[in-house]
Length: 172
Image: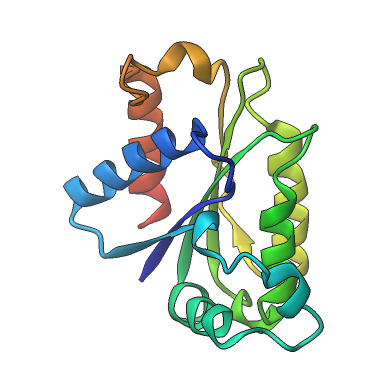
């Protein structure tokens, strides 16, 4: 099982367009996957999920979408030179062994020029600490504002081709 993760909960975010494009690629490939969007998290999870006492709702979500998956595709926007704190908090609350010896592909999203390379590096360090293997072909998507159509869909052929290449090789 593969889990496709949208690492932000910001309303009307542009990362969702990349997640949806990646989902279409996985659909075309016939890959069995689940989506995990940070908006699915219980609103109070940072307070009641921390320190080994997660809510039943959070425990069920982590079991289904993290522990039961072997591979993760994380699509993370750039927030202040890194990735969203909500995703870091989620990682901190999920039992660490749920990530152990699993594979992670990373995609960064930014309106700027670097495509969230720093955030991808931070995520790589965290996942390596958790004994997860990070796929070497990390995709930084720069200038996301110019890659979306009027319906906020990712339609840039070059970007879609790079995402498809990552998916094919990561899932081998």
